[in-house]
Length: 262
Image 1 (tube, rainbow, N blue to C red):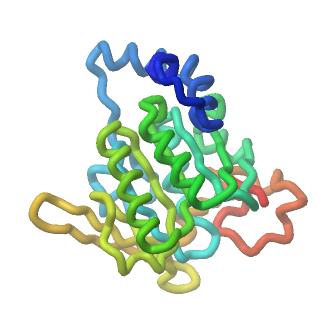
Image 2 (cartoon, rainbow, N blue to C red):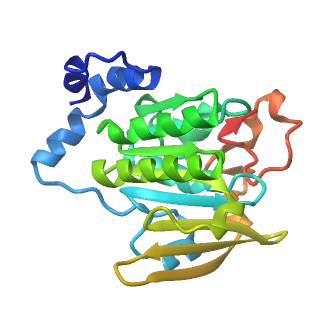
C-alpha cells in the first residue's frame, strides 16, 4: 500500500503524493476484494460506434497512451470519461489555468467523483512529475494528464519516465499532447491522433506498436457521435441548460455542456 511505503520513506511527501495517501484510505477496498476473487477488468469501450469497430479490444486499461489532438472542442474528453467510468479510481492532472471540473458532466457520464483526484500543477515540469507520481503510486487505476512540451531533451526524458511508470505499475496513463508531436516516435505502445477532417467530421488515427511491427488504423467519426444530442437538447456528457454563465464566452465546443468550465 502507498501509505505503508511512505511511512518507511524519510523524504517529505509532495502535495500530489500526500493527496494520494488520503484517497487511498477509501479507494481500493472493493478492487482488492475483487482481485482476491480473481476478477479482471474488462475492455473499455468509447460508446462511439466507428471507433469501437476500429478498436475491438477497446481503449487501453493499462500502459502509456498518447492522445494527440488538434481538434477544437476537446473531443478527447469523451474518451477519457469512458475510461474513467470503467476504471473508477483516477487522477486528473490539469493545466494550471482554465480548467475547472464541472461535476454534473462527470456524473452524467457515470463517473464517481468521490473516486477522482484533480490536481493542477503550476508548471509543465510539475505536471509531468505529478503524473509520474500518480502512475507509480499503485493507488490510481488511470491517470489523465495534459502535458505541454518541454525542451526537446527534457521532454524525451520526462515522457520515458512516465511511460516506464505506467508500464511497470499497471496504471493506464492517457497523456494529452499537441498534435504537432505526431512527427516524433510513439513513446508507448498506443497512440491516438484526433484531427478535424472537415467541419462535421473528426479523423481518428490509432497506432499500436507490436513486437515486430506497428499496426495503424483510421476511421472517420461524425462530430455528432461525440456530442450525442437527444431530442431534449442534452447529451451524455451533461445538460446544456446547466452550463455556468461564466463559460458562455468560450470558443465553440463539441460539448454543449463542457466537462471543464473555464
